[in-house]
Image (cartoon, rainbow, N blue to C red):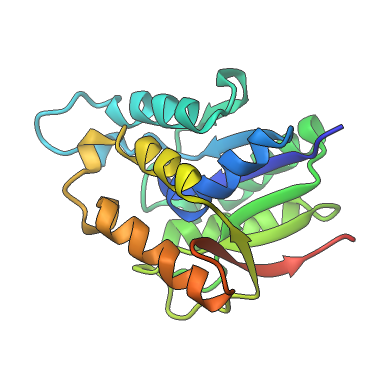
Length: 208
């Protein structure tokens, strides 16, 4: 029996960026992954795209990683205003905890400086008291990041992560969405742990 894993993605694409290759690897080994995003960011969609584009892109992106469509949920909180909905968000997380009973949860770093990411990290830590919790890295948002643990990923998994991210056509202008950046980031973390490529995580809680 594989593990049940939840990834909390404040905005669509955060989870894929922070741990996409790790999720794909887990699924390939028989784990079941559940993906929860908290907004479609309709007010932040670039000009020329339909308002629901990020929801559509997230569904395709998670499919590429191997996440079942029934395990993908995108809520409707207003972007950059999560702090005003902390209790509602916590209740959503408690609901998901009861439904899934996960072994492992991926959340943003507690030191992520984006206000929405901070809310999800803190409420995630409160909601999932019986699961191991790892924080994923988003270097452009992290003031600092303590790489406590590493997941080795190979070139195939890295290509799968990049294919997943390439589904976000509306976000392709962002410098952290390029293949050069994604490969360099994974290579740097790989060097730190004696591997070719890796994704890094902060350990918040581990049940052995």
